[in-house]
Amino acid sequence: MESASRTVDVSVVIPVYNERGNVLPLAAEVQKALTGRLRYELLFVDDGSADGTGDEIEDAGRIDPNVRHVRHEKNRGQSAGVRTGVAAARAGIVAVLDGDGQNDPRDIPKLYGRLVSVPRLQLVIGERRERRDGWLRRMSSRVANGVRSRMLGDGINDTGCGIKVFYRDRFLGLPAFDHMHRFLPALFQREGGLVSAVPVNHRPRQHGRSKYGVGNRLWAGIADIAGVLWLKKRRL
Image 1 (tube, rainbow, N blue to C red):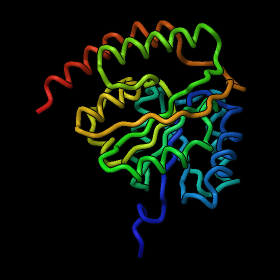
Image 2 (image 1 turned 60 degrees about the horizontal axis):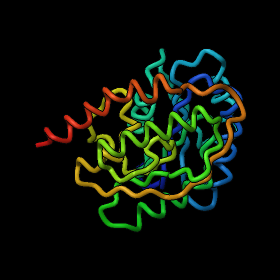
Image 3 (image 1 turned 180 degrees about the horizontal axis):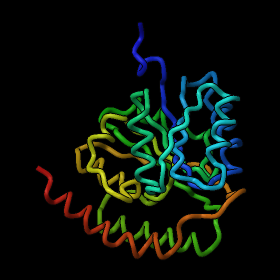
Image 4 (image 1 turned 135 degrees about the vertical axis):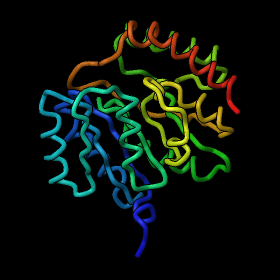
């Protein structure tokens, strides 16, 4: 009997928090983008939503049997959602998308193909060339990305892009901490892995509100950058 990791090429992990209205369209897009191209499972990690997001995930599972529902009883943050989903994944390769629908699932095969075709490559991250956000979010993201890139020297211009593809076991070997999802290029490089960025599509949010802004994207990130620098210097 084949192992579960061999029956699924890629596990798509989408952490969601109060994203009712985005789940069903996103599940349908993942199904359309991957059916006939990659064998997949789709894990929605409900991070303690209170708006009926969980009910919508259940509806998505009735439409597509590849959908799995994982739930946190209380809100634990996006990094915890990503790690929970990766730990539960059955495939050896994981694709992560944001739950707001702004990442395009049609980009997954492109990132997946890059990952498996380049030796020592451990992470492929999207790079949004045309942002579909308001000016304040674009500005805060640009500043935060610039500060991270200069201080960490990871060579990646858009570490905040939500769509990423990587090897499951390599991810689970990384140091785990709150907000770690913002620093994956530097963390993978810390372990000796290669990281690559690929241009991807970016779309406007259709439902709900962004959970990030200047306050929790830039200022809170400064302490995290200091922590990642400490990790890089203290690696055995």
